[in-house]
Amino acid sequence: MANHSATKKDVRQSRKRNERNRYYGKTTRNAIRDLKAADKTTAAADMPKVASMIDKLAKRGTIHKNKAANLKSKLAKRLNALSK
Image 1 (cartoon, rainbow, N blue to C red):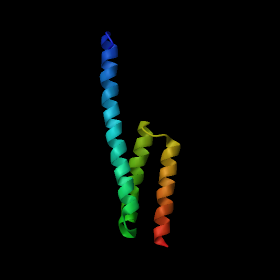
Image 2: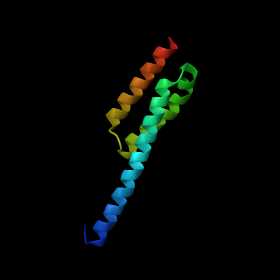
Image 3: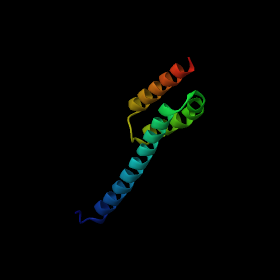
């Protein structure tokens, strides 16, 4: 364990950030799972909220921006396939 006060603070901060990132990541994954299982009308209504959650993860650096783009693209393709 670190002995410097600044290093101890950094450990506390990183632990807090890690928990926060895990929470938001899991919440978003659950929202994606629910969106995939939803019917056409519900999925269309929930898509903007889920896309926003994915964008926020990318903005915070929890996931890479390309991964966010890929997730949103796949969800949009799935939603468009339901519409046909």
